[in-house]
Length: 123
Image (cartoon, rainbow, N blue to C red; front, top):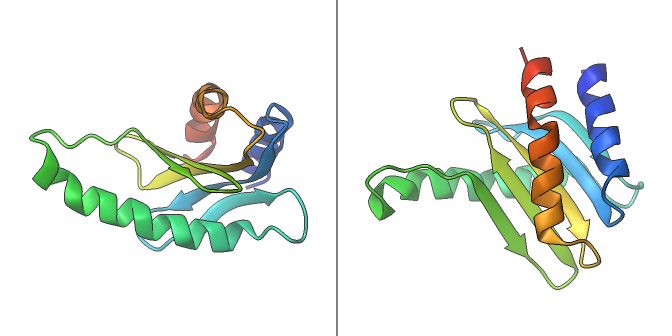
């Protein structure tokens, strides 16, 4: 857990618009590790909200495509972005919430850079 929290802290430092991040179990929405920028941002609430979206997307995927393979989900809101990275063959996802001052492509690149470290620490 401590190693995962440290990885999330490092990830946060690379994104000036960072608001929150977490590693969340898809089945029940429980964060294995989470980090928020301040007390007004609760990453566990964000995790629960995003879990519902991930579960819905995964249920719908077989009906939309012959080979359902969802890599990323980007949700754009008035105040920012939610970036969700699904890890193939794993029961969890990584999310990053960031303000509108952050570039979505940069969020994706940073999450990809930390994905291996997160996966190794989830064993």
